[in-house]
Image 1 (cartoon, rainbow, N blue to C red):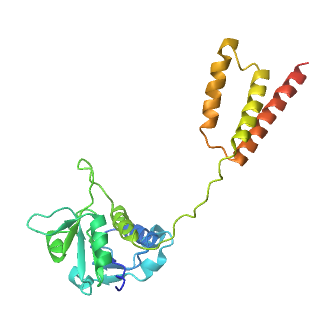
Image 2 (cartoon, rainbow, N blue to C red):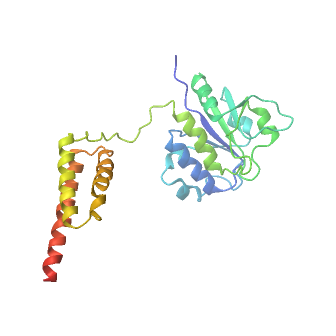
Length: 246
């Protein structure tokens, strides 16, 4: 099966250059590079977009401008309107995850369409789409900015791509228990010398609590070496302070 091409992001009548720039930044973070603008309010190119893109210059440089949404999606086989339900417009409603699954399964080019910052897509824009994509959101506060909406959609699509992940750093294996026992003995000796175990009748219970805390951490060999060094240094500091008092 031929891999589906990456979807395009279409901004309909975007208002601020800064918002176009942050959309470009969101897109490139998740591997999307094709941005289409429909009748941007302040024209294009917009000098405010570049700084807001924070280096996503390739997206801005290749952005294309169209007079109408129909022109912008003319080569797309599936169009997704990102909006809440519109009265008088009956369309299948998908979550971002479901839409991304469908995009990956579609052989043709797909488009995600986003409306103006203040008002969103109007009914005529939504009527042109094949599906509505709606983000489940707090009904008491449904306030996403344009870049946030794009990044939610782009992230769900990116799950089906081989994008770079943070490198895995394997954890050191736990140290043998005898090393932990040596550390506990070292710590107890210094705590005892410092008068920590008081009153004496609580010593057994305090030791049990100390041992319980130290044995639940999964210390590595290097962790234990470091703790030995800390305990030794604290002991030297205590002896030095006593010497200064004499």
